[in-house]
Image 1 (tube, helix red, strand yellow):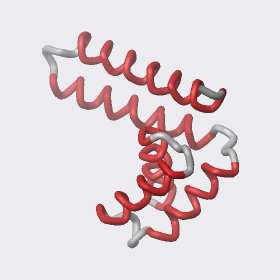
Image 2 (tube, one colour):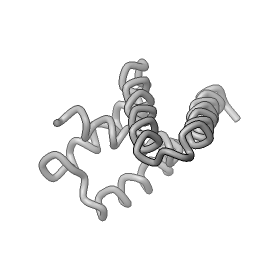
Image 3 (cartoon, one colour):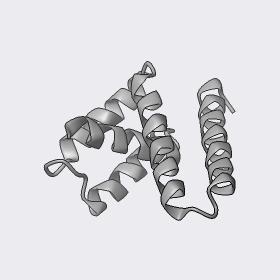
Image 4 (spheres, helix red, strand yellow):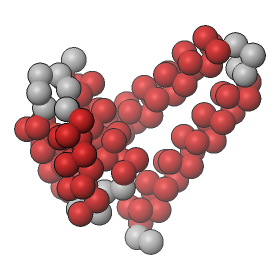
Length: 107
């Protein structure tokens, strides 16, 4: 596992830990749980956006922008993007974060 894969695994693990903690804390209050998970996802997306992006991830983000249909990426295009990301060595989690960040940036 190279340094980039190790770092992305750490990001995923930290996100899962926080999400599990929120589920435990707010198990009795679904509304608060949903709001907290949404905030966590938004914070995670912002962290990814603010990180310096390497060339492969930047190229992938550019490809996402090309395939957008208005402010969204259609499901068929998303599947194609995920295949391309896999071929470029970008994990599925990171690819979905990049897609979400690009879509969010367009709004």
